[in-house]
Length: 425
Ligand SMILES: C=C(O[C@@H]1C=C(C(=O)O)C=C[C@H]1O)C(=O)O
Image 1 (cartoon, rainbow, N blue to C red):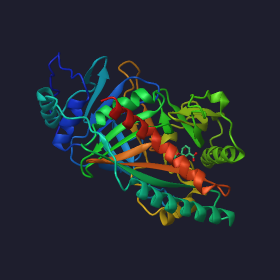
Image 2: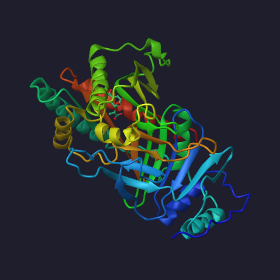
Image 3: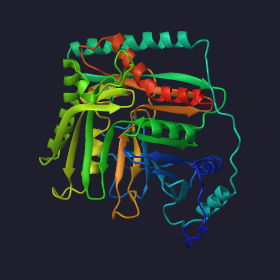
Image 4: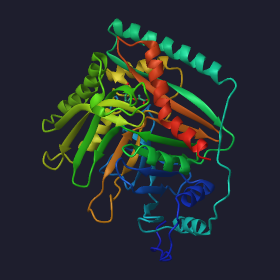
């Protein structure tokens, strides 16, 4: 229901995102909190309905909001609409200096009510959640390791027989807390720890889950000037040397396997451009990219959609790219089927994609922009349990133990920040 714009008290500003987040949670409305790579401004939107909408992922049609696609979302080219859960920006607030302020007009009764609740919100003095040791953790981990390494062996055998060239297998790792962890505090810490990542926290009341991530991987962006961007990312090594010193990106050495793996991801993007007969793209790289505690090899691709007169490029590329060979494999359909048959669990939103669409970047630039990221370096929080997700790209030369170690390192991206939050208290 549309009502007249509501006048908000001019002094209305909340010092933290917690009030908005907690009030949305209490009201049972989905909410998304995010910060784009290399930016300082934080945004929060609330979808004023109890379940997210499921909509065609069409950047030309969607209103302002936040897309949250699961991994299991595959365009087989049958003409079916390519859809994903979507949180409308019914309420949009952003951090301005020390406080949070409304970033779009308020046009509904529900929004007005929620604002009233935020104005009345008093922070609860809740204890900081501590991670608790699970006495069975070692055993659970070694069972998971065995299962993962076995599926890597099966994948390697399939690739040696020529079934496909690359597949990404993943696993989960659970940790427990004595209280439900504070998603906003964790989000803030991740923003500090990983300035170049896309950091997000998404509350989904219908699943009673909070998804928290610090993704280094852009899937598709289209900015207000119509510049399209994507990246091919693969190859993983620790960002620290044996002595615990942060390496310079120029010091990273890459093995043939990793160079080929990343080249496959780049080739896949170029194949997509070829499919739509797009020749005017800029490819930069591969170069070493720092992603938190890790380094990857990445190539950046840029297209000026206005110059090539391809306004729908973003929408078209999302369907063609997801799931990319960075999280699925190559050929895509064979790798996707192998994952579904062998991985043994539901990835849910891990290795899907997420991010704001059609949002106004700031009060100055005209037009809107969309920024979708591959949902990696993420975890799902359900009450006192957090489930981390991590995968590794496999080729026929993969070593199962090394690949397991790689997933452990990827879990550390979020784990190390959670541990430091504990240690700081
Ligand atoms: C699949 C993940 O990461 C992807 C896989 C990589 C690899 O195989 O080396 C590197 C970066 C990401 O594109 C993950 O973090 O879970």
